Every structure is written in structure tokens, then in C-alpha cells.
Image (cartoon, rainbow, N blue to C red):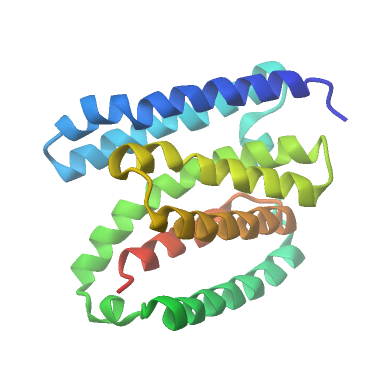
Length: 223
């Protein structure tokens, strides 16, 4: 059981306050001033990397004297048996997602199938980098830290709640409160739970990153 739970809690609270400022006031003042969509994407992902990944690496290095790539599950040894089970679960997960989307939202993969190869590449480039940063922080850092302090199921629920809450400041700032925020939050919460389970099963951040990228890629073509 870790003794620095208070330090971890305070650190995340400060981080969340900084992120609120970045996702609201800073977003309006800086991000929207970048005219190029590509430039805005590069800038946004760079800021996210500086605010999400670097502090996590510094925390485990200076506070816990661990090697950041290993501690954050970037270079940790993969559980190959767990990976096999995880890949089977990934297939099942996406089948369920497609079914629910079709039944309740009418979304299909038709736009994806009709899109050109160029559209695929552009969309993939747009959705590739953000999931890496998000997975390193929440499944690579937050979840293992919580697992050191409590049972996995509780740690997984907390990290999923925190991950979902990270999306709220920008959503609320840009759109105000709308019903779709609740629906999307539930969807993200479920995805975060699954990604947390996948991290524990495989002992590596890369399977969750892969699933996260695929999920965002497919969502970009939903229609």
C-alpha cells in the first residue's frame, strides 16, 4: 500500500485545474487563433503531451524512483496469454458497439466504406496522436497508481470517471450543457473501463492505444 496517496490526489487535482484553464480560456485565446487545421492539431497534441505525459513521467521518476517507460507500461513486458484473450475481447467489444450504434443511433460503417484512401489517411493522422497521450496518462499512470492503493475494480472505475471528466471542461465551454454530453460521457466511461481491463490483462499500454485509435477512427466516420 502506497503512503503518498495524498500527494497523488493533490497532484491530480492541480493538474485538473490546469487542464480546465487550458481547455477553456486558453483554448479560446490560442487554439482558435491558429487558422490551419493541421497547425491547430499539432499544437493541441503538443500541449497535451507536455501537460499529460511529461508530469506523469516526472512523478514516477522523482517521487517513486522508477524508470518512466517501464512504470508507464510503455516498455513493460507484454503478457502474451493476456494479449490473446484481450484481442478476442476487443473483437467482441466492437461487435457490441456496432450493434448498439446501429440499433439506437442508426450509425453504420457505410461512410467509412465509401471514403477514399486519402480520407482514411487524413483521418487516421488526425486521431492517432491524442489516444497515445491519453492512454499513457490514464491507463499507464493513473490506473497503476490506483491499483497500488485499492482493488482493481475500484481503481478501474475511478480512472474511468476521471478520464470522462477530463472531456467536460471543453465540451461545456464550447457547447454549454447539452443532452449529447451525457450520452457521450457514458460511452467514454465504458470505453475507459474496457481499456483499463485490457491494460491489466496485457500489462502493456500498446493494446489500449490500438483500441483507442481504432475507436476514434471509426467514430470519425460514424453516420
